Amino acid sequence: MLTKLFPNVDWIAMWEATQETIYMTVVSTVFTFVIGLLLGIILFLSSPNQLWANKLVNWLTGSVVNVFRSIPFIILVILLIPFTNMLLGTIRGANAALPALIIGAAPFYARLVLISFREIDKGVIEAVRSMGAKTSTLIWKVLIPESWPALISGITVTAVALVGYTAMAGIIGAGGLGDLAFLDGFQRSQTDVVFVATVFILIIVFVIQIVGDFITARLDKR
Image 1 (cartoon, rainbow, N blue to C red):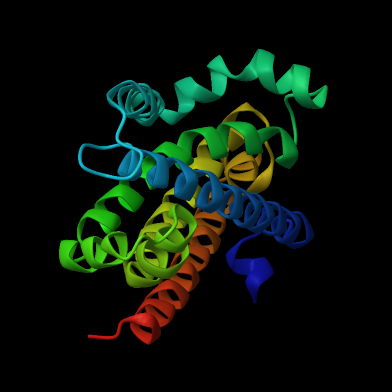
Image 2 (image 1 turned 180 degrees about the vertical axis):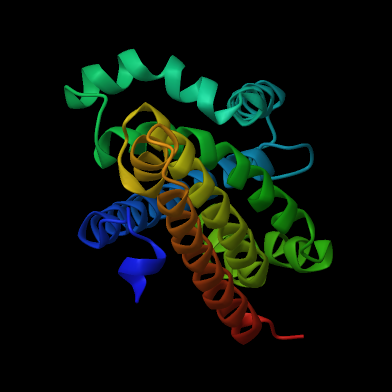
């Protein structure tokens, strides 16, 4: 039945491309969460009236975040080709896409982290500071726990964006469903390949969104 509906689709290749897309999305999401969280913490704590208040550090970190957040992803991929080649010895394959995916997404997530921290009741933060709590205590006992729902919601949005980034990275040979749709679908005028690859991408996005919304709902204490 499927063979008749989609005669040009190589289902083994489609499954392998799906695995590559999932691999790129999961790995880049994990690194994006860690790096974005660190950047967000620095941005928040170095802002005025906070523990690490420092205009220079805040400005430098904010500038780096804004610059990389503003570069269109496909351009960022091209700009990072020399760096990726130096780091991995190749610019093709799923692993070669990871530096661009992480560098492109982490600054975006860092801004979401900063927004999440700013939404925490200032009274809670002031109470903890007035008791002489260490910075580590503030981070692990207040900032992160109080903003968990927003942090998970933010990384869910970022993970969905990363699925789209993997598709764009496929255009330069990074593998995954984007690569398959472009090379086997678009360039060979096989619309059924493009259609099936698109459906698989949508399924991945829906699964990420459902899981993210479920975890956010469970963590939300309101």
